[in-house]
Length: 210
Image (cartoon, rainbow, N blue to C red; front, side, top):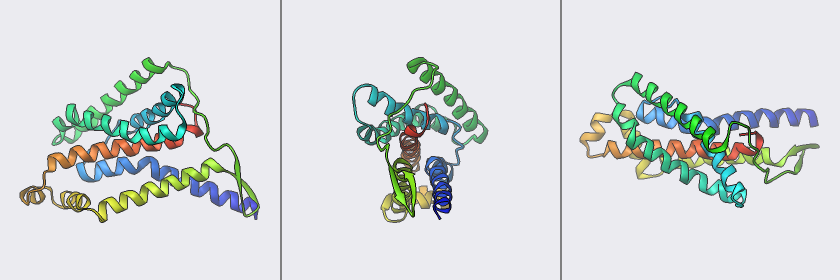
């Protein structure tokens, strides 16, 4: 029974972690039709934000709160400086975000060095479930993925912003004619996607070397 429980928990952990990592990518593509090749690097920045906060003496939970804010601001800036200029050229958005991914990756190497860094695990213990001892932090990852998904669902289906976002997804020209500021919507969407990528990086950081 314990082996079956561990197998089920591992499978759930993998699926939910993948959901958490891809959530921001799906939102950006769904609303903006932009394939963000720099999504992995935004994830990386989220992990390194946690590392930087811990190195400065801050606690992991503080870093977890700060990371989506920092990455949201970075996403807002990247959209303003780069992405908005290539919206209507699909191939160019791929090339532009690919260039951003290379620049971000090299910036991380210059800032933190080429060697892997380790983030402290804030929940190092285990919890017994159906006779199986399972790492507490992996359970937290699963809970974080569920909470993030629920938050995105509520944002899109229970708020005015979500209603406008779904209108833009369904018919952008009509949404614009109805008075929705699609330019502002795109900027906020890219910032949201970047914030979610950063959150995923922050959550996953203790499980890997960054």
